[in-house]
Length: 105
Image (cartoon, rainbow, N blue to C red; front, side, top):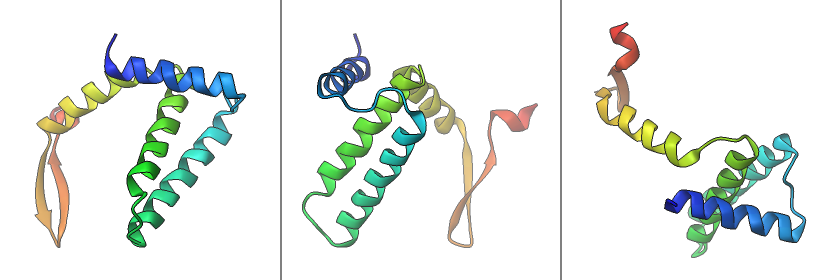
């Protein structure tokens, strides 16, 4: 079992054991947004708990993936592979994608 699958099992077991949300996908997205906002605020205010807030974001994303029946380990690996093949140029201080697999079609 990969790390992400093990993490998913632990996150899910904790949610079930504590009676946390396991069915309302909209609510889980909202919780995830809220945790990301908390992480940003911790960063903005240079609070030492920014890492803990980012961990909360990750745990909510993992739980959400389970609720949506998404194999997050597989999806992250596929997305990394896709991103590694993309080409970017800098334009007006921003990175702009100029090529990816879809543009070959």
